Length: 199
Length: 254
Picture 1 (cartoon, helix red, strand yellow):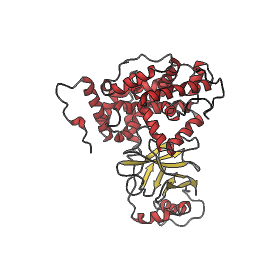
Picture 2 (cartoon, one colour):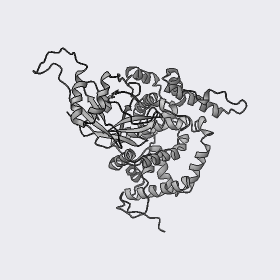
Picture 3 (cartoon, one colour):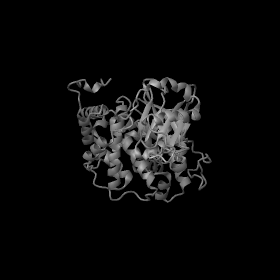
Picture 4 (cartoon, helix red, strand yellow):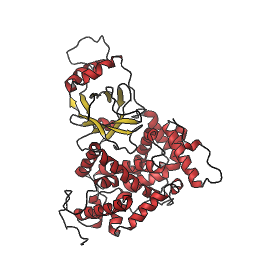
């Protein structure tokens, strides 16, 4: 069954540009799962900047990020058939693949990056991908609200871990604090976050 | 209450007050080395833990909205070349051929690895010309080392025999009925470092043959674990197991 609701005409008058963009992205991803090359090209055009942003930030160098991006799209081509629009937003699904691939690469390097990247290329778009803003609002509000409840150092460490894809060891090194202390901060922060998110 | 944690020696054994947040730590990606390997094994062994990791991925997902986009290099042509050269994608490369003799599988596979060794003769010799003259002397095409595993279901059920053909880089599995139709059974190799790598999705009916990518071929070695997890149809969306392990076995040389 490929009968997904996106093919249904959107209710006229209520379609926001965000919803339309999201629908286009879901459609491209679902059709990629049906081995549609044209849809795959469309998907690349729609998402490569976002996914390259993920790869670049975690890999920390352009050539590696490019190689990882290559692997990410091969993975997307192979796995797109498993994408379920009802379970995950398309960009979350895609970005999770990119982040995991980039982290795999980074872990395989065995070199710790003790400092954040300073030479990041210019950001072309800091706005959330349009497709996300509507349907993710509730989840976003919850996460951001709960993060406000953490101590700044807990919040910063968790945020850095997510965006830079770094380990406890690297977090501790960057802050020049003992590893055990960093683990303790993060664990307590995560426990508090869980209480807020799931409580 | 003091905010200061013990200055040192806070180990993973819960010496400090912080609760076990391993699922969140794995989703966040802060674990490394042995701790990561242990956590990944736990994903395979403990369905509740696996669900917890998934829940955390969902919790953190809104952050992807904030991730800055960067103009990507135009590598679409390179990606498409790779797709054209490697039709051996796990899902697309299910080149299993229905085997008329498949009725022999359930009984024989149950005999585990000794039987697997015997089966191997069937599997390995099948593609060869039947009339090859017997040549005990050094053969022109010596058989590459072959590995087998008996992948045993967690509960009741018939073990699945896996045979790896190093020359072709393919792994063949006997018929498996490990999932219902609304899920896929995904095969993983877990080398010594404990990190699972997907080898592909098993066919719902009949034997499966998977052609492995080069990086996965290097991971197939005696002692490595083969595990099957229950995943959404088509396989895990994350690249790591998300569902429970339903069967596993260890590769050994024959």
